[in-house]
Image (cartoon, rainbow over all chains, first blue to last red):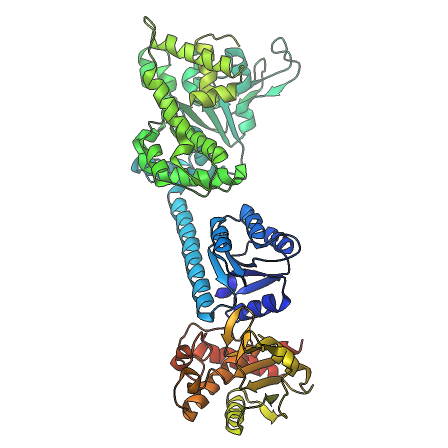
Amino acid sequence: MNSRWRILVVDDEVAMRESLAAWLREDAYAVDIAASGREAVAMAAETAYDIYFIDLKMPPGINGIETMMEIRKRQPDATVVIVTAYATVDTAISAIKEGAQEYMVKPCNPEEISIFVQRVIRLKSLERENTYLRRRLSRRYSFQDIISKNPKMQAVFELVRRVAGQRSTVLIQGASGTGKELVARALHQAGGRASRPFVGLSCAALAETLLESELFGHERGAFTGAVARKRGKFELAGDGTIFLDEIGDIPPKLQLDLLRVLQERRYFRLGGSEEIVMEARVVAATNRDLLAAVESGEFREDLYYRLNVINIQLPTLRERREDIPLLVDAFIGRLAIEAGRPVRGIAKDALKLLLDHDWPGNVRELENAVERAVVTASGDILEAGDFDFLARAARTSERWEVPDGLSLDEIEKRAVEAVLARTGGNIKAAAEILGIDRSTLYMKIRKYEIPR
Amino acid sequence: MLLCLLPTAGVQAGDLAGAGALAADVFGFEVRTLPPLAVPDATFDARRGQHDSSLVLATALDLCPPDATRLLVLTGLDLAIPMLTFVFGQAQLDGRGAIVSLARLRPEFYGLPPAPAVLAERLRKEVLHELGHTCGLVHCTDQGCAMSLSVNIVFIDRKKARLCRDCGARLAARLETMRRGADPAEE
Protein backbone atom coordinates (compact mmCIF):
# COMPACT_ATOMS: atom_id res chain seq x y z
CA MET A 1 0.00 0.00 0.00
CA ASN A 2 1.37 3.38 -1.03
CA SER A 3 -0.19 4.99 2.06
CA ARG A 4 2.85 3.70 4.00
CA TRP A 5 4.93 6.25 2.13
CA ARG A 6 4.95 9.84 3.28
CA ILE A 7 5.63 12.76 0.95
CA LEU A 8 6.01 16.44 1.81
CA VAL A 9 5.39 19.07 -0.89
CA VAL A 10 7.05 22.40 -0.06
CA ASP A 11 6.10 25.46 -2.13
CA ASP A 12 5.13 29.04 -1.34
CA GLU A 13 2.60 29.02 -4.22
CA VAL A 14 -0.65 27.57 -2.97
CA ALA A 15 -1.83 26.34 -6.40
CA MET A 16 1.44 24.56 -6.98
CA ARG A 17 1.63 22.71 -3.64
CA GLU A 18 -2.09 21.90 -3.51
CA SER A 19 -2.33 20.52 -7.04
CA LEU A 20 0.85 18.42 -6.81
CA ALA A 21 -0.26 17.06 -3.41
CA ALA A 22 -3.70 16.19 -4.83
CA TRP A 23 -2.12 14.46 -7.82
CA LEU A 24 0.17 12.39 -5.57
CA ARG A 25 -2.70 11.52 -3.20
CA GLU A 26 -4.48 9.85 -6.14
CA ASP A 27 -1.62 7.37 -5.98
CA ALA A 28 -2.52 6.78 -2.31
CA TYR A 29 0.64 8.36 -0.91
CA ALA A 30 0.24 10.11 2.44
CA VAL A 31 0.97 13.67 1.31
CA ASP A 32 1.42 16.78 3.49
CA ILE A 33 2.12 20.32 2.36
CA ALA A 34 4.27 23.15 3.70
CA ALA A 35 4.15 26.79 2.57
CA SER A 36 7.73 27.71 3.51
CA GLY A 37 11.15 26.26 4.15
CA ARG A 38 10.87 26.90 7.87
CA GLU A 39 7.49 25.17 8.07
CA ALA A 40 8.95 22.21 6.14
CA VAL A 41 11.92 21.91 8.51
CA ALA A 42 9.57 21.99 11.50
CA MET A 43 7.33 19.34 9.94
CA ALA A 44 10.33 17.16 9.06
CA ALA A 45 11.39 17.31 12.71
CA GLU A 46 8.07 15.70 13.62
CA THR A 47 7.68 13.24 10.75
CA ALA A 48 10.31 11.41 8.70
CA TYR A 49 8.97 11.83 5.16
CA ASP A 50 10.23 9.47 2.49
CA ILE A 51 10.25 12.03 -0.32
CA TYR A 52 10.42 15.83 -0.22
CA PHE A 53 9.43 17.96 -3.22
CA ILE A 54 10.97 21.35 -2.44
CA ASP A 55 10.61 24.48 -4.54
CA LEU A 56 13.95 26.18 -5.10
CA LYS A 57 12.79 29.80 -4.78
CA MET A 58 10.75 30.52 -1.71
CA PRO A 59 10.89 34.09 -0.47
CA PRO A 60 11.05 35.11 2.29
CA GLY A 61 13.07 32.94 4.68
CA ILE A 62 15.18 30.01 3.68
CA ASN A 63 15.35 28.82 0.08
CA GLY A 64 14.90 25.30 -1.23
CA ILE A 65 18.54 24.23 -1.00
CA GLU A 66 18.88 25.56 2.56
CA THR A 67 15.63 23.78 3.46
CA MET A 68 16.99 20.55 1.99
CA MET A 69 20.26 20.90 3.92
CA GLU A 70 18.40 21.46 7.20
CA ILE A 71 16.19 18.41 6.59
CA ARG A 72 19.12 16.21 5.62
CA LYS A 73 20.89 17.04 8.89
CA ARG A 74 18.15 15.09 10.66
CA GLN A 75 17.33 12.62 7.91
CA PRO A 76 20.38 11.75 5.82
CA ASP A 77 18.38 9.06 4.00
CA ALA A 78 15.52 11.33 2.91
CA THR A 79 14.98 11.65 -0.83
CA VAL A 80 14.81 15.28 -1.90
CA VAL A 81 13.59 16.60 -5.26
CA ILE A 82 14.39 20.24 -5.93
CA VAL A 83 11.72 21.82 -8.13
CA THR A 84 12.25 25.03 -10.06
CA ALA A 85 10.62 27.10 -12.76
CA TYR A 86 13.90 28.73 -13.68
CA ALA A 87 16.31 26.06 -14.78
CA THR A 88 19.96 26.92 -14.86
CA VAL A 89 22.93 24.59 -14.93
CA ASP A 90 24.39 26.31 -11.84
CA THR A 91 21.35 25.73 -9.65
CA ALA A 92 21.04 22.14 -10.87
CA ILE A 93 24.69 21.42 -10.05
CA SER A 94 24.39 23.12 -6.69
CA ALA A 95 21.20 21.16 -5.81
CA ILE A 96 22.73 17.81 -6.75
CA LYS A 97 26.01 18.66 -5.00
CA GLU A 98 24.16 19.39 -1.79
CA GLY A 99 22.46 16.01 -1.97
CA ALA A 100 19.25 16.38 -3.98
CA GLN A 101 18.42 13.10 -5.69
CA GLU A 102 16.58 14.83 -8.52
CA TYR A 103 16.19 18.26 -10.03
CA MET A 104 12.89 18.87 -11.82
CA VAL A 105 11.89 21.82 -13.95
CA LYS A 106 8.22 22.68 -13.60
CA PRO A 107 6.01 22.00 -15.37
CA CYS A 108 7.25 18.49 -15.90
CA ASN A 109 5.83 15.55 -17.75
CA PRO A 110 3.49 13.36 -15.64
CA GLU A 111 5.37 10.29 -16.83
CA GLU A 112 8.71 11.67 -15.64
CA ILE A 113 7.50 12.46 -12.12
CA SER A 114 5.51 9.21 -11.87
CA ILE A 115 8.49 7.07 -12.90
CA PHE A 116 10.74 8.95 -10.48
CA VAL A 117 8.42 8.48 -7.50
CA GLN A 118 7.89 4.80 -8.31
CA ARG A 119 11.66 4.28 -8.61
CA VAL A 120 12.31 5.92 -5.25
CA ILE A 121 9.55 3.92 -3.56
CA ARG A 122 10.85 0.68 -5.04
CA LEU A 123 14.35 1.47 -3.76
CA LYS A 124 13.05 2.41 -0.31
CA SER A 125 10.95 -0.77 -0.18
CA LEU A 126 14.10 -2.79 -0.87
CA GLU A 127 16.00 -0.86 1.81
CA ARG A 128 13.22 -1.54 4.34
CA GLU A 129 13.12 -5.19 3.37
CA ASN A 130 16.89 -5.39 3.69
CA THR A 131 16.81 -3.83 7.16
CA TYR A 132 14.02 -6.21 8.17
CA LEU A 133 15.89 -9.26 6.89
CA ARG A 134 19.10 -8.18 8.59
CA ARG A 135 17.25 -7.80 11.87
CA ARG A 136 15.71 -11.24 11.43
CA LEU A 137 19.11 -12.69 10.60
CA SER A 138 20.63 -11.05 13.64
CA ARG A 139 17.79 -12.45 15.80
CA ARG A 140 18.39 -15.87 14.29
CA TYR A 141 22.04 -15.74 15.26
CA SER A 142 21.47 -14.24 18.67
CA PHE A 143 20.75 -15.85 21.97
CA GLN A 144 19.78 -13.49 24.76
CA ASP A 145 22.27 -10.65 24.10
CA ILE A 146 24.93 -12.81 22.46
CA ILE A 147 25.29 -12.81 18.69
CA SER A 148 27.03 -15.61 16.82
CA LYS A 149 26.70 -18.00 13.93
CA ASN A 150 29.92 -19.78 14.85
CA PRO A 151 29.36 -23.53 15.42
CA LYS A 152 31.23 -23.49 18.76
CA MET A 153 29.08 -20.61 20.01
CA GLN A 154 25.92 -22.26 18.67
CA ALA A 155 26.87 -25.32 20.74
CA VAL A 156 27.31 -22.99 23.75
CA PHE A 157 23.81 -21.55 23.14
CA GLU A 158 22.40 -25.08 22.98
CA LEU A 159 24.16 -26.09 26.19
CA VAL A 160 22.98 -22.92 27.96
CA ARG A 161 19.39 -23.61 26.82
CA ARG A 162 19.65 -27.17 28.12
CA VAL A 163 21.09 -26.41 31.53
CA ALA A 164 19.52 -22.99 32.20
CA GLY A 165 16.68 -24.48 34.22
CA GLN A 166 18.93 -26.66 36.39
CA ARG A 167 20.73 -25.78 39.62
CA SER A 168 24.07 -27.43 38.83
CA THR A 169 27.12 -25.22 39.15
CA VAL A 170 28.53 -23.91 35.89
CA LEU A 171 32.13 -22.99 35.14
CA ILE A 172 32.62 -20.64 32.20
CA GLN A 173 36.14 -20.44 30.79
CA GLY A 174 37.38 -18.04 28.17
CA ALA A 175 39.86 -15.26 27.50
CA SER A 176 39.17 -11.66 28.55
CA GLY A 177 36.44 -10.04 26.48
CA THR A 178 34.89 -13.26 25.17
CA GLY A 179 31.60 -12.62 26.96
CA LYS A 180 31.72 -14.78 30.09
CA GLU A 181 29.36 -12.51 32.02
CA LEU A 182 26.94 -12.37 29.06
CA VAL A 183 26.79 -16.18 29.09
CA ALA A 184 26.21 -16.15 32.85
CA ARG A 185 23.36 -13.69 32.36
CA ALA A 186 21.97 -15.80 29.52
CA LEU A 187 21.95 -18.82 31.86
CA HIS A 188 20.05 -16.72 34.36
CA GLN A 189 17.58 -15.26 31.83
CA ALA A 190 16.86 -18.44 29.89
CA GLY A 191 16.07 -20.50 32.99
CA GLY A 192 13.27 -20.01 35.44
CA ARG A 193 15.27 -17.42 37.41
CA ALA A 194 14.82 -14.42 35.11
CA SER A 195 12.65 -12.57 37.63
CA ARG A 196 14.98 -13.39 40.56
CA PRO A 197 18.21 -11.57 41.46
CA PHE A 198 21.40 -11.88 39.43
CA VAL A 199 24.29 -10.92 41.68
CA GLY A 200 27.79 -10.64 40.27
CA LEU A 201 31.08 -10.33 42.09
CA SER A 202 34.59 -10.08 40.76
CA CYS A 203 36.75 -12.17 43.04
CA ALA A 204 39.93 -10.52 41.73
CA ALA A 205 38.87 -7.03 42.71
CA LEU A 206 38.81 -7.48 46.47
CA ALA A 207 41.25 -8.31 49.26
CA GLU A 208 40.78 -11.68 50.98
CA THR A 209 38.95 -10.45 54.09
CA LEU A 210 36.75 -8.11 52.10
CA LEU A 211 35.88 -10.86 49.65
CA GLU A 212 34.87 -13.16 52.46
CA SER A 213 32.57 -10.54 53.94
CA GLU A 214 31.22 -9.66 50.49
CA LEU A 215 30.34 -13.29 49.82
CA PHE A 216 28.98 -14.40 53.17
CA GLY A 217 28.01 -11.12 54.84
CA HIS A 218 28.79 -10.38 58.45
CA GLU A 219 27.15 -9.74 61.79
CA ARG A 220 27.57 -6.50 63.68
CA GLY A 221 30.91 -6.52 65.50
CA ALA A 222 32.26 -9.47 63.50
CA PHE A 223 35.44 -7.45 62.91
CA THR A 224 36.69 -3.94 63.39
CA GLY A 225 34.53 -1.68 61.31
CA ALA A 226 31.58 -4.07 61.17
CA VAL A 227 29.18 -1.54 62.64
CA ALA A 228 26.04 -3.18 61.33
CA ARG A 229 24.88 -6.53 60.04
CA LYS A 230 25.52 -6.89 56.32
CA ARG A 231 24.00 -9.44 53.99
CA GLY A 232 26.48 -11.17 51.69
CA LYS A 233 26.18 -11.76 47.96
CA PHE A 234 25.03 -15.35 48.47
CA GLU A 235 22.16 -14.06 50.56
CA LEU A 236 21.35 -11.20 48.18
CA ALA A 237 21.18 -13.64 45.29
CA GLY A 238 18.35 -15.47 47.10
CA ASP A 239 17.07 -18.17 44.75
CA GLY A 240 18.50 -16.37 41.72
CA THR A 241 22.04 -16.63 40.38
CA ILE A 242 25.36 -15.68 41.92
CA PHE A 243 28.07 -15.02 39.37
CA LEU A 244 31.63 -15.36 40.69
CA ASP A 245 33.94 -13.80 38.12
CA GLU A 246 37.69 -14.43 38.14
CA ILE A 247 37.17 -17.47 40.37
CA GLY A 248 40.72 -18.60 39.60
CA ASP A 249 42.04 -15.74 41.70
CA ILE A 250 40.42 -16.47 45.04
CA PRO A 251 42.83 -17.11 47.89
CA PRO A 252 43.26 -20.63 49.39
CA LYS A 253 41.23 -20.03 52.55
CA LEU A 254 38.25 -18.79 50.58
CA GLN A 255 38.61 -21.74 48.21
CA LEU A 256 37.95 -23.98 51.20
CA ASP A 257 35.00 -21.87 52.43
CA LEU A 258 33.46 -21.85 49.00
CA LEU A 259 33.94 -25.60 48.67
CA ARG A 260 32.00 -26.08 51.92
CA VAL A 261 29.16 -23.85 50.74
CA LEU A 262 28.93 -25.73 47.45
CA GLN A 263 28.97 -29.09 49.21
CA GLU A 264 26.58 -28.32 52.04
CA ARG A 265 24.63 -25.40 50.52
CA ARG A 266 24.68 -23.81 53.96
CA TYR A 267 26.91 -21.18 55.53
CA PHE A 268 27.20 -18.62 58.33
CA ARG A 269 27.63 -14.87 58.10
CA LEU A 270 31.07 -13.83 59.50
CA GLY A 271 30.73 -13.72 63.28
CA GLY A 272 27.26 -15.24 63.05
CA SER A 273 25.71 -18.34 64.50
CA GLU A 274 22.59 -18.52 62.35
CA GLU A 275 22.91 -21.03 59.57
CA ILE A 276 21.78 -19.75 56.21
CA VAL A 277 20.64 -21.97 53.36
CA MET A 278 22.18 -21.16 50.01
CA GLU A 279 19.52 -21.42 47.28
CA ALA A 280 21.21 -19.50 44.50
CA ARG A 281 22.67 -21.13 41.46
CA VAL A 282 26.43 -20.64 41.33
CA VAL A 283 27.99 -19.66 38.00
CA ALA A 284 31.75 -19.13 38.10
CA ALA A 285 34.04 -17.79 35.41
CA THR A 286 37.73 -17.43 34.81
CA ASN A 287 40.18 -16.58 32.07
CA ARG A 288 42.82 -18.79 33.68
CA ASP A 289 43.60 -22.39 32.85
CA LEU A 290 42.14 -23.78 36.07
CA LEU A 291 43.33 -27.32 35.45
CA ALA A 292 46.91 -26.05 35.18
CA ALA A 293 46.33 -24.08 38.40
CA VAL A 294 45.15 -27.33 40.02
CA GLU A 295 48.25 -29.13 38.81
CA SER A 296 50.54 -26.42 40.14
CA GLY A 297 48.74 -26.52 43.49
CA GLU A 298 47.32 -22.98 43.27
CA PHE A 299 43.72 -24.10 43.03
CA ARG A 300 42.00 -26.83 45.03
CA GLU A 301 41.24 -29.88 42.97
CA ASP A 302 38.04 -30.68 44.92
CA LEU A 303 36.74 -27.12 44.40
CA TYR A 304 37.60 -27.35 40.71
CA TYR A 305 35.43 -30.45 40.31
CA ARG A 306 32.65 -28.91 42.41
CA LEU A 307 32.59 -25.87 40.15
CA ASN A 308 33.14 -27.72 36.93
CA VAL A 309 29.86 -29.68 36.96
CA ILE A 310 28.89 -28.04 33.69
CA ASN A 311 31.75 -26.58 31.70
CA ILE A 312 31.35 -23.88 29.06
CA GLN A 313 34.37 -22.95 26.98
CA LEU A 314 34.14 -19.68 25.04
CA PRO A 315 36.19 -19.31 21.85
CA THR A 316 38.28 -16.21 21.22
CA LEU A 317 37.14 -13.77 18.53
CA ARG A 318 39.99 -15.04 16.33
CA GLU A 319 38.32 -18.46 16.41
CA ARG A 320 34.96 -17.00 15.32
CA ARG A 321 35.93 -14.38 12.76
CA GLU A 322 32.75 -15.10 10.77
CA ASP A 323 30.88 -13.33 13.58
CA ILE A 324 32.72 -10.05 13.06
CA PRO A 325 30.30 -8.66 10.40
CA LEU A 326 27.25 -9.62 12.51
CA LEU A 327 28.79 -8.13 15.65
CA VAL A 328 29.86 -4.95 13.88
CA ASP A 329 26.35 -4.53 12.47
CA ALA A 330 24.77 -5.02 15.89
CA PHE A 331 27.26 -2.66 17.58
CA ILE A 332 26.70 0.06 14.96
CA GLY A 333 22.92 -0.28 15.38
CA ARG A 334 23.12 0.15 19.13
CA LEU A 335 26.07 2.53 19.48
CA ALA A 336 24.87 4.95 16.77
CA ILE A 337 21.63 5.42 18.73
CA GLU A 338 23.43 5.71 22.06
CA ALA A 339 25.93 8.22 20.71
CA GLY A 340 23.29 10.07 18.68
CA ARG A 341 25.34 9.66 15.48
CA PRO A 342 23.88 9.11 11.99
CA VAL A 343 26.12 6.08 11.29
CA ARG A 344 24.23 3.28 9.56
CA GLY A 345 26.83 0.91 8.14
CA ILE A 346 30.42 0.04 7.37
CA ALA A 347 32.35 0.16 4.09
CA LYS A 348 33.72 -3.08 2.65
CA ASP A 349 37.39 -2.15 3.06
CA ALA A 350 36.80 -1.10 6.67
CA LEU A 351 35.13 -4.42 7.41
CA LYS A 352 38.03 -6.25 5.79
CA LEU A 353 40.40 -4.38 8.07
CA LEU A 354 38.37 -5.53 11.09
CA LEU A 355 38.27 -9.11 9.76
CA ASP A 356 42.07 -9.11 9.43
CA HIS A 357 42.76 -7.61 12.87
CA ASP A 358 43.99 -9.91 15.62
CA TRP A 359 41.63 -8.79 18.45
CA PRO A 360 43.62 -9.84 21.53
CA GLY A 361 40.90 -8.14 23.62
CA ASN A 362 38.24 -10.17 21.79
CA VAL A 363 34.62 -8.96 21.41
CA ARG A 364 35.06 -6.22 24.01
CA GLU A 365 37.97 -4.77 22.04
CA LEU A 366 35.93 -4.95 18.82
CA GLU A 367 33.04 -3.17 20.52
CA ASN A 368 35.36 -0.45 21.83
CA ALA A 369 36.86 0.01 18.36
CA VAL A 370 33.43 0.32 16.73
CA GLU A 371 32.32 2.75 19.44
CA ARG A 372 35.38 4.93 18.87
CA ALA A 373 34.81 4.90 15.10
CA VAL A 374 31.07 5.68 15.45
CA VAL A 375 31.83 8.66 17.67
CA THR A 376 34.61 10.07 15.47
CA ALA A 377 33.31 9.18 11.96
CA SER A 378 32.40 12.12 9.75
CA GLY A 379 30.04 10.27 7.40
CA ASP A 380 27.14 7.87 7.83
CA ILE A 381 29.25 4.89 6.71
CA LEU A 382 32.33 3.83 8.71
CA GLU A 383 35.34 3.97 6.41
CA ALA A 384 38.72 2.25 6.77
CA GLY A 385 40.17 5.62 7.83
CA ASP A 386 37.86 5.66 10.84
CA PHE A 387 39.80 2.65 12.16
CA ASP A 388 43.27 4.17 11.67
CA PHE A 389 43.88 3.85 15.39
CA LEU A 390 43.92 0.04 15.02
CA ALA A 391 46.68 0.19 12.44
CA ARG A 392 48.64 2.63 14.60
CA ALA A 393 48.32 0.30 17.58
CA ALA A 394 49.46 -2.65 15.43
CA ARG A 395 52.43 -0.68 14.06
CA THR A 396 53.43 0.36 17.57
CA SER A 397 53.50 -3.25 18.68
CA GLU A 398 55.47 -4.31 15.60
CA ARG A 399 58.22 -1.74 16.17
CA TRP A 400 58.37 -2.13 19.88
CA GLU A 401 61.61 -3.64 21.09
CA VAL A 402 61.55 -5.76 24.20
CA PRO A 403 64.12 -4.62 26.78
CA ASP A 404 66.71 -7.26 27.64
CA GLY A 405 66.37 -9.48 30.64
CA LEU A 406 62.70 -8.94 31.34
CA SER A 407 60.29 -11.76 32.11
CA LEU A 408 56.82 -11.75 30.57
CA ASP A 409 55.38 -10.91 34.00
CA GLU A 410 57.73 -7.95 34.36
CA ILE A 411 56.75 -6.67 30.91
CA GLU A 412 53.07 -7.00 31.78
CA LYS A 413 53.63 -5.23 35.10
CA ARG A 414 55.38 -2.33 33.36
CA ALA A 415 52.63 -2.10 30.75
CA VAL A 416 49.94 -1.94 33.42
CA GLU A 417 51.93 0.64 35.41
CA ALA A 418 52.46 2.78 32.31
CA VAL A 419 48.81 2.74 31.27
CA LEU A 420 47.64 3.50 34.82
CA ALA A 421 50.05 6.40 34.99
CA ARG A 422 48.76 7.68 31.65
CA THR A 423 45.12 7.47 32.74
CA GLY A 424 45.85 9.01 36.15
CA GLY A 425 44.84 5.79 37.88
CA ASN A 426 41.46 5.61 36.09
CA ILE A 427 40.70 1.88 36.14
CA LYS A 428 37.92 1.98 33.52
CA ALA A 429 40.02 3.94 31.01
CA ALA A 430 43.11 1.82 31.69
CA ALA A 431 41.14 -1.43 31.27
CA GLU A 432 39.77 -0.18 27.94
CA ILE A 433 43.24 0.73 26.67
CA LEU A 434 44.65 -2.63 27.76
CA GLY A 435 41.66 -4.44 26.21
CA ILE A 436 40.85 -6.29 29.43
CA ASP A 437 37.94 -5.98 31.83
CA ARG A 438 38.19 -4.13 35.08
CA SER A 439 38.29 -7.23 37.25
CA THR A 440 41.25 -8.59 35.27
CA LEU A 441 43.00 -5.26 35.73
CA TYR A 442 42.35 -5.33 39.47
CA MET A 443 43.74 -8.84 39.56
CA LYS A 444 46.92 -7.74 37.78
CA ILE A 445 47.29 -4.73 40.10
CA ARG A 446 47.14 -7.07 43.04
CA LYS A 447 49.36 -9.67 41.46
CA TYR A 448 52.11 -7.18 40.67
CA GLU A 449 51.50 -5.14 43.84
CA ILE A 450 51.23 -1.96 41.85
CA PRO A 451 50.65 1.01 44.20
CA ARG A 452 47.59 3.14 43.35
CA MET B 1 -27.91 10.25 -5.79
CA LEU B 2 -27.62 13.04 -8.32
CA LEU B 3 -24.74 13.65 -10.70
CA CYS B 4 -24.67 17.05 -12.39
CA LEU B 5 -22.93 17.07 -15.76
CA LEU B 6 -21.50 20.49 -16.58
CA PRO B 7 -20.20 20.97 -20.15
CA THR B 8 -18.08 23.86 -21.39
CA ALA B 9 -18.15 25.17 -24.94
CA GLY B 10 -17.07 22.65 -27.56
CA VAL B 11 -18.47 19.55 -25.91
CA GLN B 12 -20.86 17.60 -28.17
CA ALA B 13 -24.18 16.13 -27.10
CA GLY B 14 -22.86 12.65 -27.88
CA ASP B 15 -19.93 13.12 -25.45
CA LEU B 16 -22.34 14.18 -22.71
CA ALA B 17 -24.62 11.24 -23.42
CA GLY B 18 -21.71 8.78 -23.21
CA ALA B 19 -20.46 10.21 -19.92
CA GLY B 20 -23.98 10.30 -18.48
CA ALA B 21 -24.70 6.71 -19.47
CA LEU B 22 -21.53 5.48 -17.75
CA ALA B 23 -22.29 7.45 -14.59
CA ALA B 24 -25.79 5.94 -14.50
CA ASP B 25 -24.71 2.37 -15.34
CA VAL B 26 -21.66 2.04 -13.07
CA PHE B 27 -22.44 4.44 -10.22
CA GLY B 28 -26.23 4.37 -10.32
CA PHE B 29 -26.40 8.16 -10.48
CA GLU B 30 -29.44 10.05 -11.65
CA VAL B 31 -27.88 12.40 -14.25
CA ARG B 32 -28.81 16.04 -14.79
CA THR B 33 -27.06 18.12 -17.48
CA LEU B 34 -26.51 21.77 -16.55
CA PRO B 35 -26.23 24.71 -18.96
CA PRO B 36 -22.71 25.14 -20.35
CA LEU B 37 -20.13 26.82 -18.12
CA ALA B 38 -18.47 30.00 -19.36
CA VAL B 39 -14.88 29.37 -18.35
CA PRO B 40 -13.32 32.54 -16.84
CA ASP B 41 -10.27 33.99 -18.61
CA ALA B 42 -8.40 33.92 -15.29
CA THR B 43 -8.11 30.16 -15.60
CA PHE B 44 -6.08 30.49 -18.81
CA ASP B 45 -2.29 30.49 -18.74
CA ALA B 46 -1.30 32.29 -21.92
CA ARG B 47 2.35 31.26 -21.62
CA ARG B 48 1.42 27.59 -21.63
CA GLY B 49 -1.69 27.94 -23.82
CA GLN B 50 -3.60 25.78 -21.31
CA HIS B 51 -6.26 26.18 -18.66
CA ASP B 52 -5.55 25.51 -15.00
CA SER B 53 -7.59 22.45 -14.22
CA SER B 54 -7.85 23.24 -10.49
CA LEU B 55 -9.20 26.74 -11.18
CA VAL B 56 -11.79 25.53 -13.72
CA LEU B 57 -13.00 22.86 -11.32
CA ALA B 58 -13.17 25.38 -8.44
CA THR B 59 -15.27 27.73 -10.62
CA ALA B 60 -17.63 24.90 -11.54
CA LEU B 61 -18.03 23.78 -7.93
CA ASP B 62 -19.15 27.30 -7.00
CA LEU B 63 -22.04 26.88 -9.45
CA CYS B 64 -22.93 23.35 -8.44
CA PRO B 65 -26.53 22.85 -7.23
CA PRO B 66 -26.64 21.95 -3.53
CA ASP B 67 -28.60 18.74 -4.15
CA ALA B 68 -25.88 17.28 -6.41
CA THR B 69 -23.97 14.33 -4.95
CA ARG B 70 -21.27 14.74 -7.56
CA LEU B 71 -20.33 17.26 -10.22
CA LEU B 72 -18.56 16.20 -13.41
CA VAL B 73 -17.21 18.91 -15.73
CA LEU B 74 -16.64 17.89 -19.35
CA THR B 75 -14.46 20.24 -21.35
CA GLY B 76 -12.75 20.48 -24.69
CA LEU B 77 -10.04 22.70 -23.18
CA ASP B 78 -6.48 21.45 -22.73
CA LEU B 79 -5.87 21.24 -18.97
CA ALA B 80 -2.78 21.36 -16.78
CA ILE B 81 -1.72 21.93 -13.19
CA PRO B 82 1.29 24.10 -12.28
CA MET B 83 3.62 21.11 -11.71
CA LEU B 84 2.55 19.05 -14.74
CA THR B 85 2.62 19.77 -18.45
CA PHE B 86 -0.93 18.43 -18.82
CA VAL B 87 -3.63 16.36 -17.16
CA PHE B 88 -6.34 14.25 -18.80
CA GLY B 89 -8.59 15.10 -15.89
CA GLN B 90 -8.64 15.86 -12.21
CA ALA B 91 -10.77 14.88 -9.25
CA GLN B 92 -11.18 15.66 -5.60
CA LEU B 93 -10.19 12.45 -3.85
CA ASP B 94 -13.16 11.55 -1.66
CA GLY B 95 -14.69 14.82 -2.79
CA ARG B 96 -17.58 16.19 -4.86
CA GLY B 97 -15.99 17.42 -8.05
CA ALA B 98 -14.20 15.98 -11.08
CA ILE B 99 -13.21 17.30 -14.49
CA VAL B 100 -12.32 15.46 -17.70
CA SER B 101 -10.76 17.06 -20.75
CA LEU B 102 -11.46 15.76 -24.26
CA ALA B 103 -8.53 17.69 -25.75
CA ARG B 104 -5.90 14.96 -25.45
CA LEU B 105 -8.36 12.12 -25.87
CA ARG B 106 -9.05 13.09 -29.49
CA PRO B 107 -6.93 11.21 -32.05
CA GLU B 108 -6.54 14.55 -33.89
CA PHE B 109 -4.32 15.81 -31.01
CA TYR B 110 -1.76 13.20 -32.06
CA GLY B 111 -2.06 14.00 -35.79
CA LEU B 112 -4.48 11.14 -36.53
CA PRO B 113 -7.87 11.31 -38.29
CA PRO B 114 -10.95 11.71 -36.10
CA ALA B 115 -12.33 8.43 -34.72
CA PRO B 116 -15.57 8.95 -32.75
CA ALA B 117 -15.64 5.37 -31.37
CA VAL B 118 -12.06 5.67 -30.03
CA LEU B 119 -12.87 9.02 -28.44
CA ALA B 120 -16.06 7.67 -26.84
CA GLU B 121 -14.19 4.69 -25.35
CA ARG B 122 -11.38 6.87 -23.98
CA LEU B 123 -13.95 9.24 -22.50
CA ARG B 124 -15.74 6.38 -20.74
CA LYS B 125 -12.42 5.29 -19.17
CA GLU B 126 -11.55 8.78 -17.97
CA VAL B 127 -15.06 9.48 -16.62
CA LEU B 128 -14.94 6.19 -14.71
CA HIS B 129 -11.41 7.01 -13.47
CA GLU B 130 -12.15 10.52 -12.18
CA LEU B 131 -15.55 9.67 -10.68
CA GLY B 132 -13.81 6.67 -9.06
CA HIS B 133 -11.44 9.10 -7.32
CA THR B 134 -14.40 11.10 -5.97
CA CYS B 135 -15.61 7.82 -4.46
CA GLY B 136 -12.28 7.28 -2.68
CA LEU B 137 -10.60 4.93 -5.19
CA VAL B 138 -6.87 5.48 -5.64
CA HIS B 139 -4.62 4.37 -8.50
CA CYS B 140 -4.60 0.65 -9.13
CA THR B 141 -1.57 -1.44 -10.05
CA ASP B 142 -3.67 -3.57 -12.45
CA GLN B 143 -2.84 -2.00 -15.80
CA GLY B 144 -6.17 -3.16 -17.27
CA CYS B 145 -8.20 -1.45 -14.55
CA ALA B 146 -9.70 1.96 -15.29
CA MET B 147 -8.21 3.18 -11.98
CA SER B 148 -4.62 2.60 -13.16
CA LEU B 149 -2.58 5.78 -13.60
CA SER B 150 -2.35 7.10 -17.17
CA VAL B 151 0.60 9.34 -17.89
CA ASN B 152 0.06 9.31 -21.66
CA ILE B 153 -2.55 8.21 -24.21
CA VAL B 154 -0.97 4.76 -24.59
CA PHE B 155 -1.75 4.05 -20.93
CA ILE B 156 -5.39 5.05 -21.50
CA ASP B 157 -5.73 2.81 -24.54
CA ARG B 158 -4.14 -0.08 -22.64
CA LYS B 159 -6.74 -0.09 -19.89
CA LYS B 160 -10.40 -1.09 -20.07
CA ALA B 161 -13.52 0.97 -19.35
CA ARG B 162 -14.16 -1.16 -16.26
CA LEU B 163 -12.79 -1.74 -12.80
CA CYS B 164 -10.75 -4.71 -11.61
CA ARG B 165 -12.34 -6.97 -9.01
CA ASP B 166 -10.75 -5.21 -6.02
CA CYS B 167 -11.60 -1.68 -7.16
CA GLY B 168 -15.11 -2.85 -8.13
CA ALA B 169 -15.66 -4.26 -4.65
CA ARG B 170 -14.37 -1.08 -3.01
CA LEU B 171 -16.62 1.06 -5.19
CA ALA B 172 -19.66 -1.13 -4.47
CA ALA B 173 -19.03 -0.81 -0.73
CA ARG B 174 -18.63 2.97 -1.02
CA LEU B 175 -21.82 3.36 -3.15
CA GLU B 176 -23.73 1.31 -0.61
CA THR B 177 -22.53 3.66 2.17
CA MET B 178 -23.46 6.68 0.05
CA ARG B 179 -26.93 5.28 -0.63
CA ARG B 180 -27.41 4.97 3.13
CA GLY B 181 -26.70 8.69 3.35
CA ALA B 182 -23.08 8.70 4.53
CA ASP B 183 -20.73 10.34 2.04
CA PRO B 184 -17.26 11.61 3.08
CA ALA B 185 -17.53 14.18 0.25
CA GLU B 186 -20.24 16.01 2.19
CA GLU B 187 -18.18 16.28 5.38
